[in-house]
Structure formats: structure tokens, C-alpha cells
Length: 95
Image 1 (cartoon, helix red, strand yellow):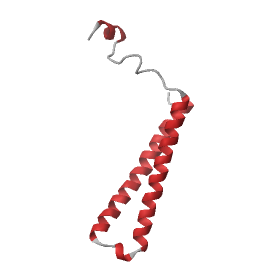
Image 2 (image 1 turned 90 degrees about the vertical axis):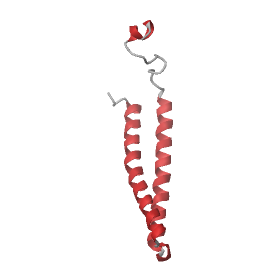
Image 3 (image 1 turned 180 degrees about the vertical axis):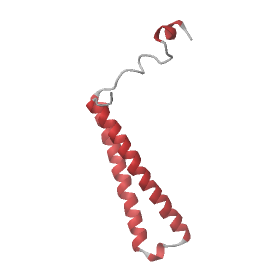
Image 4 (image 1 turned 120 degrees about the vertical axis):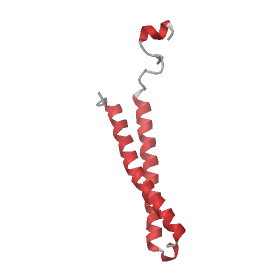
């Protein structure tokens, strides 16, 4: 440890620990919401196409449907968690 980091008690520099502005959090929230919504819609559309067309029910397409289903569940949990975290940062309810 150098003397500067020994004074602070950590190796993290002060420029990395500053809080971002509220507009950065709003932009990040909008990006996460947009990506989550697009992924949710596209995965739901893929499952709808798979469910309606009997010709698509081959072994390989069942594997694709399984991946789409797991991605859909991941998007639901990850986007919800990210949006809740971002909204807590925007409203300062995190602490």
C-alpha cells in the first residue's frame, strides 16, 4: 500500500467513488427498460410462433424453444432487479 492509499484506508481512488448525476441514472433506467421490453416481446413472439406452427415442432426447435423460455425467465428476473435497483438510485431510497 502506498502512503496515499494508506491514508484513505482503501485502494479505490476518489474519482471512482463519486456519485453519478441523476441524468445518468435516468438514462441507464431507460436503456435497461428498453432492452428488457424488447427482449420480452421478441421471446414471447418466438414462443407464440413455436406454439402455433406444428411444423416447427422438431427436436432441434424444441431445444430453441427451451432456450427462448429460459431467456424469457432470465429477462423477467434480471430486468426487474435492474429496474428496481436503478429506481432506488434515482430516488435515493437505496440507503
